[in-house]
Image (tube, rainbow, N blue to C red; front, top):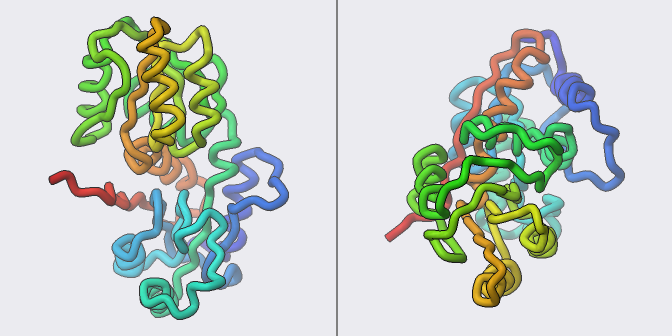
Length: 264
């Protein structure tokens, strides 16, 4: 036992992030009692049924997740009351008395962006001058093909989706981890100091087509898509290490949610 209640542990994490809470943030407690004594923490990209089972098996009663638990950005449950998947998952959570807290907005708003920081550490890339979400990283010159191979090896992804010529040389990479939206990705791809955009999810009819037309019209750009999970998981693994000293000795561990896709 850490001597902390779940709500106290959450407050410590928020204070350490050093970000003024935004009105309407999604970083709220989704399930559980904040006055319950904290027994242990499991950090994840998203709280799948397997992650919930892992928390119960380890004795942890707080899951810190980056993405929603209830299948929409705000974790709204109106309309899900009779859904069999929601009801089964909710029963699993309630059976084990687990609190689920989302830490999304403020982990991104922290400087440096916590998700991006973990991703850069995993890749062994230098920190950008601006540590904010979407910053540009300067790398040694290499082909898009070589960059994709490096991403596959260091992130453990089965493949990287690429728009643009694989043999083009790039060095200035705009980090668009997660799913920031097509507008942000377009703005990144349009910058004069960017050769390639690295993203998790993309909007195919927006970003992909902009980058494809840029290439066809003589403005060299490349887009590399690694998938949402693979672009943010390292940032949540980093979070587990980051919060461990804050919680009075309570056990803290990271649980990989895994890639939801199978590649046939």
